[in-house]
Length: 447
Image (cartoon, rainbow, N blue to C red; front, side, top):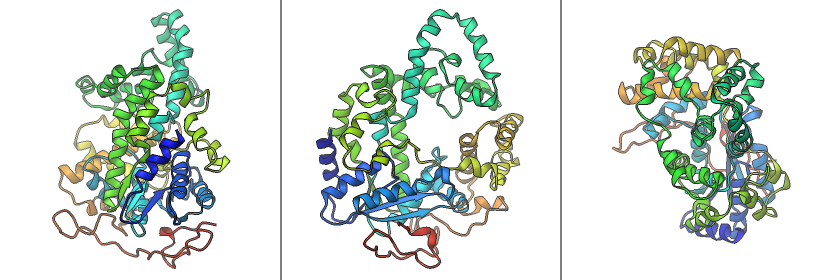
């Protein structure tokens, strides 16, 4: 495994222009950065992004790895105002509502990196190949624990148990509602529906025309891929995600890096690596409670022990907190506002309940509100013909101070002007990039 990973890394380093690595401080990007550092003669450059909120900030881990491998490290801290200010322009770049809240910080770190390199390597694909997501483990455990339950308890009795689960206190319901007691056997319920942002019951509550849910199966492609895959449940979930979920992640990676005029490469998806890992049995990747077991073993001596042992954070974005607190007007305008309601897609009372539950802290609907906000912004740009620069003017607390689209569009017309970009700064012997006066949010402070 180690030999294949190092070979794939070397092959992706072929370039006539400077290269760098996106470094989150997680297992995948840390291992990649360490292998790049060993493969080149010069000091590598690494780039990271984070937020001021501690629960969504991995920068301390990225700094630890940067010092461990001796990279020249830079980082950017994105404020919520900058985050939402950039959103309409990035929806324009993506040509569709942005599904992943992590797309925006990805753009910011790509924008930082383009001042220093022309190509970046990323750890995308490792989670799907090596079974790094917690949902693989949860699905496997539910399937094993639920087998005797489903065999012994009649369907009508199970329906009653589900009603009892949904009546539990909020904290207990959060876990029991995703357990075998609230689910039916089969990959649709256990894996797809259980981890969907908008599950089928919620879709039926929100849509003005709930019959539309039956018009098209959103899981058809994933079910096809799962059914066609070989091996056990773990192998088939992995292969289904590689053919569906990973495709969306790679589109995000490509669109956000291209929006910043930088090329991104994915060594973990080298064809030799993929062929080898796909042939490994699932228990080598998910070993008990340990995810990505074979990858951890292969890179054990390359990265700090604390990185090897830390829990996965998964590029967290505190969008739920922002939409509950200082950025409520975004929800009021793009989810509950008159223009959104006039489209007649959703039941307004159901949306109001969703928003109220989130604001009261009863249920975390941050991911759902994020998608609804994006859908309305997309409509205003692509259906109503509104300019991306004008979209946020409808929300009074949001003031557009920066624009983040490229200066020129495909037809050469000026789209936006970037202000106050810092000049690249030399790093000292520890990897510290000196702060640039007046532009602290764009350059790193390591150490």
